[in-house]
Figure 1 (cartoon, rainbow, N blue to C red):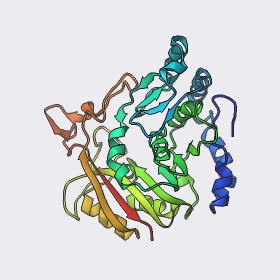
Figure 2 (cartoon, one colour; figure 1 turned 90 degrees about the horizontal axis):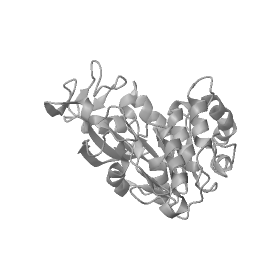
Figure 3 (cartoon, rainbow, N blue to C red; figure 1 turned 45 degrees about the vertical axis):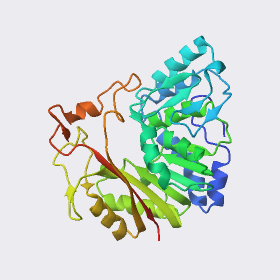
Figure 4 (spheres, rainbow, N blue to C red; figure 1 turned 180 degrees about the vertical axis):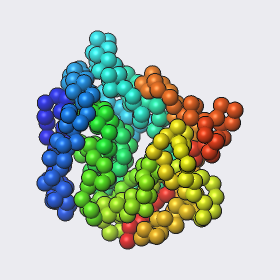
Length: 331
């Protein structure tokens, strides 16, 4: 469904497919929900971001690569230097870029997160060929595009941050309208309860921002069909099944960080929420090789959040960021 440049564009067939998969109520209300979420009266920067997307050069990609570390749209030969300068200017107007990298017509967009490193950790646990996938808190759609590259039949990403949605709209400008991937300006709480329409649901980097982590897990379960799979990635701490860090204030300078469980406690949470076949996929320390300041994200990054005398601690004295990936099956 094509709209005016800078306006949100949905992939062809999205609403019909949602309705056909038993999500008719959501498909009916989705256009109105999107319009309300992308209201310029709520977000004063939205007209500027839309103008930036509308001003991007009209280019025709000779190649699209969704199975690469740097998601590739076009090659250097598809754009001249003048077009590439306009491309850079327009994309930089959507700063900061948190997830990436992207290779766009020969321009390397090196985002804050080298998201390919996380992708390489989670990809072995994903079995999404032919599946309908929901990516909760998807950011600008980097992982949604990688999921499509791994063979998913349809990927729906949701993120309530309008800037990230507009970043995806910038990428969507050069993607085929029929490519079955979307980033919608919604939070998980905006979806109908017990949607039950997805084979796989991803929640990465979201759980520790939820005041009620169990309610988040139950809502994720409600999005899955019977027997569907959840891939959960979140901050954790070392410890036993009774260990959970509840920061008294900020964690790594983040205000909205609530519960950081140990992996055994996280497994218990999943089991208490009705999930089965809980499996640990990966646990890793976040390093400045993976998260760092770049020209495409010029604000503070991980190095600024750690104790300069002891990088094993945050600036507040908590354990440095450690992330775990688990998969679990819905009943």
